[in-house]
Image: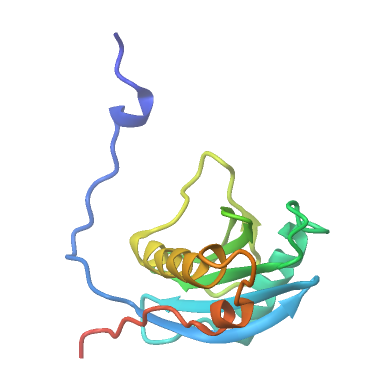
Length: 167
């Protein structure tokens, strides 16, 4: 059997050891009838700025279904804006009952020209997965464990685990 082409030329491992990245909750906003938590991650010292946040919200407006697929009416999700070492990454994520939907966008550093990443592209990095894990746990705690009386406000105000960079 021939080796899978996906493994024939693996990506090299990073040359630097893992280091926490600045991760902060920026609050909640409403767009296209959805309430969205904003989470910012920075490889350097500067979090994504206002222009990058606005570009991410515009991408979210294009991605978020109208109306929600499940008809739950909760209309909740989150955006992760990650100013990485090679690009600005934007994850548009929304909940439909117990399913998380996600779309990934990318812009060259220093620009807000977001382009949709194709399905065969990456999904998330380890820093983004930390934020996604927090959102999963919060969704279970505030919504799924209490289906008769979901606490959407509790979910929306539960900020992610913040990581501090080494001094």
